Length: 502
Image (cartoon, rainbow, N blue to C red; front, side):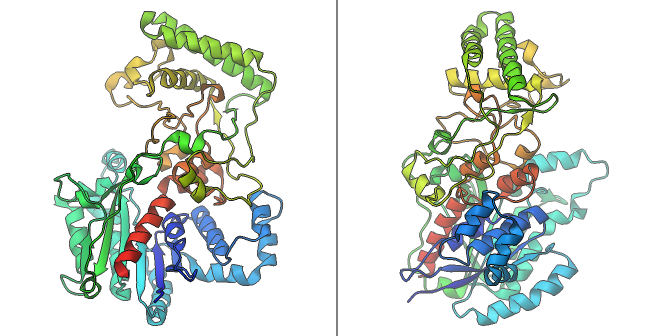
């Protein structure tokens, strides 16, 4: 018998978890996990979320959707063409701040109705905001005068997630968060142990839910079965997250075989998804951004970087020589690259390509570069060439002194990876929301482009399909991508959960 589980996505962001879960189909073509409600408070992420909910109303997106993401019609034009489907998307999504009284008053009647109508039960997915748990966030909070973790409501937003579990009593839930939650403490008490206890008892008794490990791990750490290393599961990114899978105990009684996610035999790399995309130039943020000014600025950047390498003696002579070669190539190049491309390209990795690519896509969205300061161009040039030679990014101590930024603590060790190239031959480092602030940690591996990654490139590393359109300005788009769960990983979790539920 085909079963459909009404699925509620909390703290949904742009919808990474929902994208993976909703993509799973039964043999008859129906969705195994039907998204009944998605909740997000941030306006730009919510706009993206609602647009994707609209897309889910169709078996395949309508032509008008492709015209919209190509910028050929407005959002209002799209809505006018499909008012019923847009109304369904409006019903499926709610822009509310979970944990507030207003959100509770608006949501609880909806949730109660979903629970009563879900013949096969409900599933809850999502992850409370992670700023209070992440190592970076905690370090930042310690610098705030008078900061009291016990008074930071973000530490306890997971309780709203659990309150909704108690209201719905879903057959299963999936809760995602950063690894920092494992060591986060409030008042000397570990947050994670409290979270586990509250989740297990979310049905009203101390053993309402069983928490199953998603991975088989030889690591002897207490919680290693809940730590997902995305690069082990075909995601071209080294993203490590805590993901908890809970199944209601009366349902567990009917599960005879416990399964886990199966690691892939080989890792996908940056080249798997970015190699072959149209090359783009960076922009200039402090001077007039013309193609001619860019060419002059980047030639100058390569020459300055080469000179800086030579001034440090023989240590970086090979890098200096290659920088000089690139400077000459830029001089000889007739056509200067554009900052934006809508050209649709294939993906080298067939498995990832079948997930990311859309044969009906006529214009690749969200693929435009950001501007950089001229001083940083020389650092990007040096770092990218260094990575091309050594297959890794340079550490701070390997930068020529003349390229070192004017930070008083540059030599302290805290900025060892301040300029990080995402090399072709390995998975990328974790795509985080910090990519919205500057591109220093996300330098493109092609030295000739001398830039950081675009939103679309970051989205590919996160395994968002190429037809997934991110609303808002570029900064907001980067934040959405960096905060999301990789949809292809979510799909694998959905497949595992479906097999357990039968």
